[in-house]
Amino acid sequence: TQMMPYLALAQDDTALQDLLLAVLHRQFDCMARDPYANAFNDGPSGRAHDPDDLCQDPWVWEQKYEVDSLAFPLLLAHRFWTATGRTDHVARTLRTARTVITVWRTEQDHERLSAYRFRRRNGPSSDTLPNAGRGTPVGRTGMTWSGFRPSDDACRYGYNVPANLCAAAALDGVAELSRHAHADELAEDAAQLASELRTAAVRHGTVQHPEFGPVYAYEVDGNGNALLMDDANMPGLLSLPLVANVPTTDPVYLATRRFVLSPANPTWSRGTAAEGIGSPHTPDDHIWPIAIAVRGLTSDVRTERIDALRTLLATDAGTGQMHESFHKDDPSHFTRPWFSWANAMYAELALDIAGLGTRPLWTTPPSASRAPRSRVS
Image 1: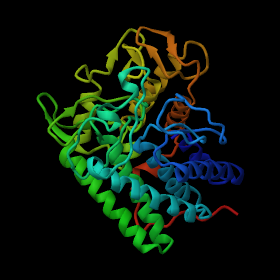
Image 2 (image 1 turned 45 degrees about the horizontal axis):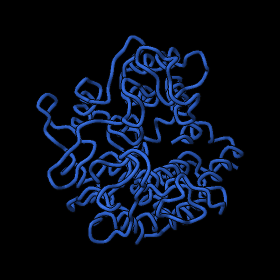
Image 3 (image 1 turned 45 degrees about the vertical axis):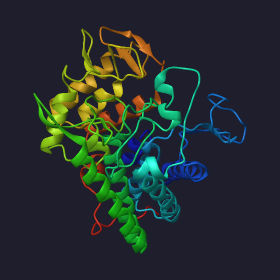
Image 4 (image 1 turned 90 degrees about the vertical axis):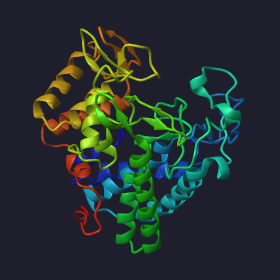
């Protein structure tokens, strides 16, 4: 997602296009090496977040399996093609997509088919998986299982609903790329899995809230348990229009939006400096600039988008940088002196307000009948 704002500037800049392609290829190299890992070394150095982790691949820094780690590079590949018309990455994208589909199919039946385990002896409970590293038990729903959230915290329940909807959107893009590359079997496989994930997320991930009506849960387990909250990281429930092809006018999304932007969401807070969504990954009463930017980007009201930008400008504590999070009453109390992901989302929002952003790339779902722009010569 940190690369997405550059797509707004890439159409007439081949050097920038080449940079984005290099990022994509690096991501694809990592995914081919270990699709379950979330962080890699720049070579086989053997460095690791925790040397006692089960994964001993010298290339892997950490093997926290997150669905979004596989979804976002595929989303970027499709949106890059749409924005620039270039196709020199398509063959590699489709090879990677086959690996991803295999993993997501396996994790649809995590209890029976998956060999993935993650155990960490030292640290908080959010840094390891219970049940001998398998995670809390899940029933089969049609969604694909994830061990960890986009924040790197362990999932309480194994089906992260926004991550599944994001995965479905990534597969929509794979299907469209495959059709244009005449890879019809892959197009069919991607479209079928996208349909399964989306249908299951809506069926099993929608719950009745006593105040807001039908809303998306953040996580479910297929055994009747649901976690009602949102996390500022992406993909989250608030960001569904950005990352999951969910219209901003969708009734369940609108109800979910009202829920996550209210005190009913345990990660939401309001203070004298700002209000917004935080994360269990950071201290209580801390708001994430990413979530403020996402609130603006997913609003159909221009004044709300401008208010979000003004809030970001007013809460950088004079550093000229976006932070991971800041205290709701005092922005000078923040986590991380700079956070490139938050900086990228600030840029995305500013470009969007100026009419120069990537909105056309995420408000128009993939379609087999839509041709990309011509390649820049």
